[in-house]
Image 1: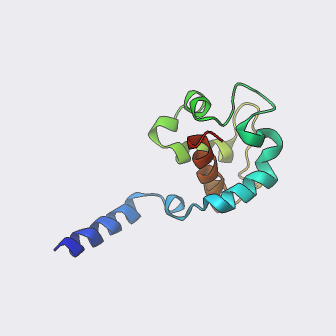
Image 2: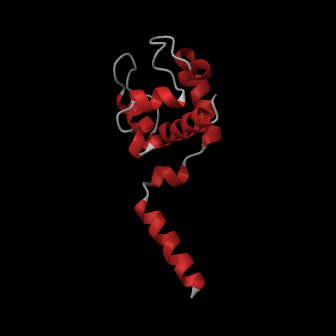
Length: 112
């Protein structure tokens, strides 16, 4: 019975979460970040607008939907852009963006 419940829970989680959440690769995200994002966001900073860093508190203050889903909010920002940040929807694949979001969230959580 316990195995059946565990299997049902695993299936429910797989269907409840977006596929990119399950597949995000933070290590690959670090590589994409280094080649695509670090020019403006090295070390979690922001050379365009120093108040809008990638530090946890700044993400909470800047991304309106960060509280309801950290990586999802980062994905939306990278995909759509906003303010001084351009959209990367035509530059990076959805998988690359999900990986970058996982990397940024991990780095923000550990204080960069």
